[in-house]
Each structure stands twice: as structure tokens, then as C-alpha cells.
Amino acid sequence: VGTTAPAAAPPVTAPVGVPAVADRDGECALPAGTVLVDVRQADATIRSDVRYATANNFTGAVLPGYERPVALLRAEAAQALGRVQRRLRTDGVGLKVFDGYRPIRATQAMVNWAQRTGNQWVLDQGYVAGISGHNRAGTVDLTLVDLRTGGEVDMGTAYDTFSAAAHTANAAGTIAANRQRLVRAMAAEGFRNYDKEWWHFTLPGDFPPLDAPLRCFGG
Ligand SMILES: C[C@@H](N)C(=O)N[C@H](C)C(=O)O
Ligand SMILES: [Zn+2]
Image (cartoon, rainbow, N blue to C red; front, side, top):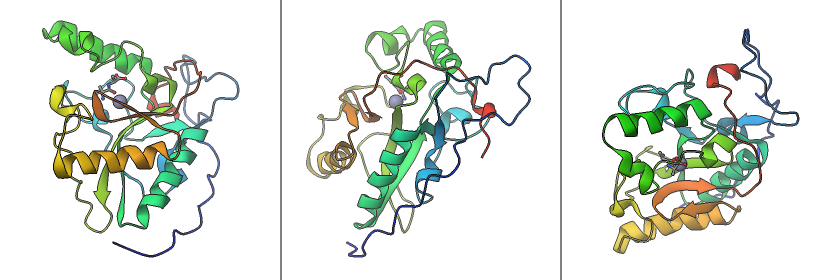
């Protein structure tokens, strides 16, 4: 357990919400005032493994719109996540982000996968949403890691385990304590956990779903 005081918060620099890429079809356009920020701009010590930008996810394929392995959130959510990271750091742990903003086209690909492969139940039981908080860029999937080794804290199941074992309250002993540590740290900055997925947290807010692919965002 560390006792070092948290370092001053690094400033969130220029937003990455401004497309710096060819945008022939206008698909990079965002509603006025929408600013998405890379979580690592909010705190450079946040780790990430953006699984939907790889084949290492439940669909077995890179999802449409994930041309870059970047975790973006609305500016206020990214900044809140940075504060979570700095609070956790005093105890030698930090955050590892699996997913942030998710383009609508990626959600549609998840839905198509479920229907095509006989896994409609993941939709019916609420493990994949037809319109997701991730589309609104206020939702993040993440876990805790040991800051020194990078090793993931044991949460009892792997990320995207779609079963009762992943329901946040469905744990005992060390696993329950680890999940509660994550829930408490996130709640301190306003994030609410989804009770069926220990890794899924939303900062409440009324925002429209977006579809700009990740290739649109520089930085
Ligand atoms: C697919 C999983 N990581 C997830 O985010 N599920 C929730 C319910 C969602 O799709 O919003
Ligand atoms: Zn999620």
C-alpha cells in the first residue's frame, strides 16, 4: 500500500474531437459542442486494451468503426476517470480500459453477430444493448490493475463473460472486495455500475448516440 500523494492532475489538452482525416462521406461530423477525449489524455497512466479493435473479443473479429485502439469518452467523463485514476494510485492500483465510446455501427455488428450465431440470448438478457451508453460516449468498460506489474486484479471472471458469474453482486470474499473497490472508486466520481457486468460503468447524462468511427479521431 503506497502513501505517496497523488500528482497534480495533468491538464486535458486539445480535444481529439476535431477530425484530422479525409472525411469524404461526412461520417466524422459530430453534433455541435460534442468533444470526445482519449482517456489517456485525462491521465497518461491509465492503461488500455481496446478489445473491439482486435479479434480478441466475443465476436472473434475487429468491430466496424474500431480502426484505432483508442478509448474515447465525452470530456467530462474522461476527466472524471482521470480523477478516479489519481485517487486509486495512492494504493498502487490503477485502471485498465477495455472500451469507451463505441460507434453505433459496432453495436449493430454485435447485434448482428448475436442473431447470426444463435446467441440472441445475450440481447434478451441484457448483456449487449441495441443502443448502448457506449454509443453516447459516457460509458466505459474497465478493470483494476497493479500499477507496478500491470497485472489485472482478480474480478472472478474475464471481461465480457455473459453469465451470472459476472453480475457484480454475485461474488464472495476477495472477489467481492475487489469488485466493490472498483465500484466505490468509480462511484466517488459519479459513475454508476451496471449490475450484470462488473466492468461496465456510466456517467449519467442525456446525450445522443454517435456513429463517427474511431479513425476520425486523431491524437
Ligand atoms: C458488450 C459489453 N461489453 C457491453 O458493453 N454491454 C452493455 C450492456 C452494452 O452493450 O451497453
Ligand atoms: Zn460496457
